[in-house]
Image 1 (spheres, rainbow, N blue to C red):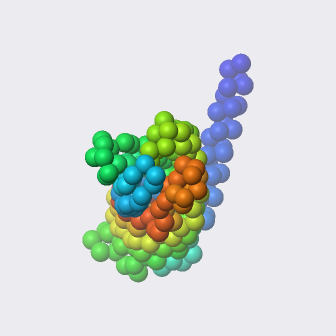
Image 2: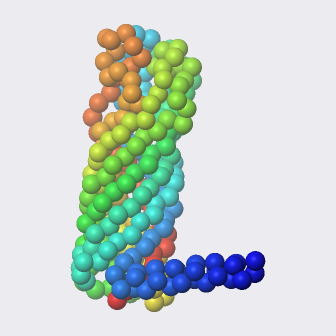
Image 3: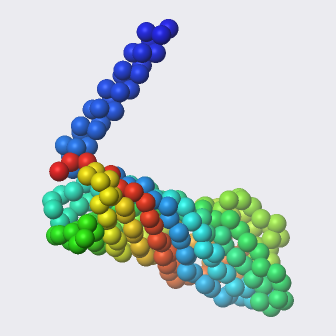
Length: 226
């Protein structure tokens, strides 16, 4: 049994060694960051139950990803993020208390990164832009009340989007750095499977337009390769 466990450990160590060698050979950066998120999508609308307003609360989450360096100046980045921004509804016609609904946003993005040619005091800025796929998921699949409807089942909303921004990378050690990032993410306003017209008679969320998610992240980046 001890020999078997030792062999398993050796296999794991060998796999890690091969992975590290491959990363060094491919010139890849890997990063992990904590993320704060402010989703701006304030709406006012009228449904049979009255006049309502909706907005999102500031939340947080995390972002992980990697960048393949094409050359000294440019790279291609892929990342995954998960943040939470609760949706808040207010009945403006009756002055009712605000109701909150948990919303989780998961995102996969592919971006082009442009780095500054030189570092300044061990800090190198970068610009980034690219496309993304967002999935806004209600944390409850149904609600007892939504926009005055007694039973309005909410379902995930999938959106294609665009993001742009920039950041700084500060070198701490040879292969480890500090990464600061800020971006604006643009998608269509999610309606969670509800009708976008209040005239249908079914539960509706009659909003449209764009949602802007300003996200600010900080974490570590590991540099593999030259």
